[in-house]
Length: 543
Image 1: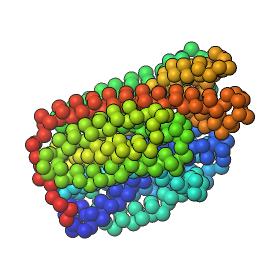
Image 2: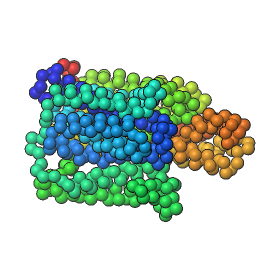
Image 3: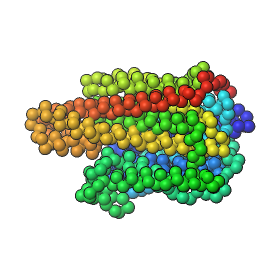
Image 4: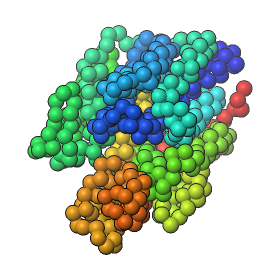
């Protein structure tokens, strides 16, 4: 693609960007459609948790593997194969008639997504050079940020207009277009000196370690960080709530042990000149190391925020899914606008300064949101700080990838891109875990305090409502509100729903403050990057 005519080069970029948007949106639309899936397929809570989290677990576990395979066997080959596999899994998900079929389909979607993401970044890194690379990364970041933000709105519209199955069926025509564009306009490329052999031990230890780590981080709030909170059934084997510890504990311990073993294996194989899954010498590049740290903490803060906001809007504020989607669309608009202009700013002040500026804007916008998140504030006013947050998100996301990968040699583009993507995924899992934990702790404090003001609600009922709020992520508020005076609390039902809404708003606000702290760490890390970055970099117009 580096030697291809300009028009061909950018049509190839369209294929990569569309593939990226497809897998990012699919990671966010399922949560919106989950209530409809529960009604249609009779999902249990455990089924619902696996459907939402398994995609992220498999996705994160295999990024390094497919990044390395793309370097060896061809980036277009892996990209097209991933799109085809993702489309096939989407068709299977749309046709699922029971929870197990849907869970398996989501697992295969995760495999396809892991094939697509690192190949989009490595193909850009190899296919574009100099000023055009900055343009490509800027547009790539804008697509990623915008797709993540617009996913809930898109999923809500598809689910309410047709059915939950349409969120998967829409991938089929999109995948067909992507494959045609990739085959016609995206030339094949691979590492010029691909490693001989294959790092089987690296594959097994990295995939298993990352899968267990991400699983533990995602499911900690649901299954309990130490003591078991519920029965967990996997492959017909049940981890009982009567057991001594939660399954999260061995998952995290074994996962971390496998990752330590993976680092040792890669170090030893690297010294011997053997094929490796991860070139540890990449972390000797200052911008690569500091940039990945920035990406991790920022992803944690962003995903903590993005997890709690839709729940707050629907359950605490009483909005419909579509209304919440429209409010969240303000973030997408901000991200698209700033992502498109980030390259011009980078030409004047360098990409790392654009990243730093974007993170500062995110920080200020998150602080405004944290103050505004009460049931007394109109949720529609949140569109203003959300648009501001999107502006910052677009600036940071658009330039962070190019900053991290700028010093990476072409032959390690796939592995480096996969490493950064894996870091982001683990950071996202950490953010989701932190958000779930803070919400659960917040409910334990705010729910009894709020319900104590309602005369007639017993101490036992207050404790029960803490469990319901945690177990349903606040959906019980909508259930009580819909029942009105005909529910369990009788005439007190509307008052209980109002108090639970206040409790949710207070707990969600606490999550936003924690997310703000994580973003602040990202600002500090980006400040370190300034030492390893030139004052300005020339960026061309799109041509």
